[in-house]
Length: 272
Image (spheres, rainbow, N blue to C red):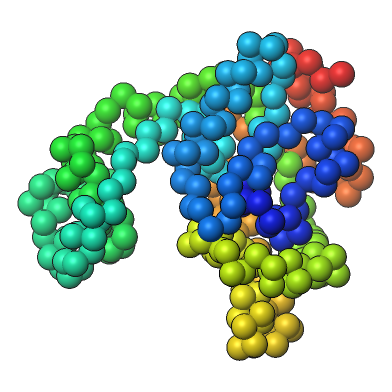
């Protein structure tokens, strides 16, 4: 969500001072009314990585979205979209769409959640545009490499265990965002929020507050619950990746930093 201009406080975007000390990329790419797809993020990110490689600069990929991370380092492929095709498919009932997909691909249940209408519709859209069924796409070499965690580019990954007090830290962090003016920031950007930006955790839960539908305390509690749920999903996603080395939690950040540097040094990564 840091790709969207104006969504600063609620995404914990690096400040101008931080960005002056360390060059940041893929921040403030588009205005929030424009939906930036993972495929577009992948294209922009890989271009940056290629440029840094040419300059022999060691990049650090840092963030919370596992899908966006894997889109940069793994051979993830994103099929095309077509609004007209999708509109035709969305006109079908859920049952009709499911039956049509099963005719196209009798083994689709092994690759697509048939109970999820959005997944079914997307599978039909991709088939209409590419002629490839979910089973055919799953059998491709790129999909096999993704399942096997075989990267497209070499990297060394470190995960920082969040520790036992994560829930309290999330609440405290969100309260600091409110103190810094998150509600006012949302009021400024809300008229221009697109579909994806409006789903940003923290903003989504405060929109009813800005609209006068609920009080701030209700919105705050909803945002904290949503953030905790997001953190749990992120942790589950990253824990499945066998390439990530996890640094145990310690309340002293210096201890965590030393552990990370020792691991990077052991892998031959320059850490000065």
